[in-house]
Amino acid sequence: MFFLNQFKIVTIISLLTFASIPAIAHNVEVSEEVAATFHIEPNHNPQVNQPTTAWFALTRRGGNSIPLSQCHCILRVYRTPRANDATPLFEPALIPINVEKYREIPGAKITFPQGGAYELEISGTAKDQSFAPFKLSYTVNVVP
Image (cartoon, rainbow, N blue to C red; front, side):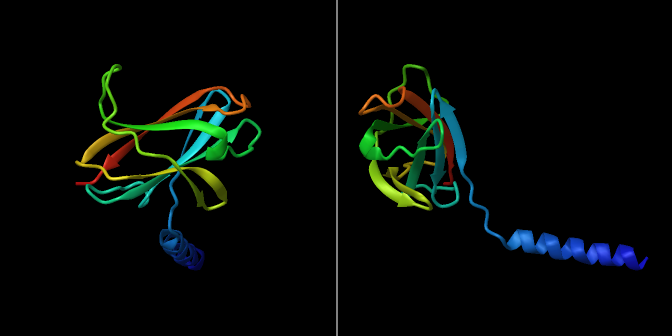
């Protein structure tokens, strides 16, 4: 009985401790030899008419980072679901940003006009031919 009570106390303390640690959510996608870790503020829950920052930590196979200065990158934003021939709602300008351990990675300020699902598609080619062209997409749910 004593052991069971101690186990319950340890379990409750552990759950409370882990519940208080903020979770940092990142999505990772891979295309050809480029991977991207994607994040959008705040905590992947952007809100309508509120400027938000999206960033893409691009890496080559092997783990070397790809700064925006080495990539002809384009970001397109679509409503979902979208047809194959859909035109993007907008193409936010990419700027180099520093986030967490990443330096000069592609980032963009985005303001979503309505609630619902959007697709962010980033594509690019190497300025020096050091990696194959890539295209990656992420679905974002915008809170009204």
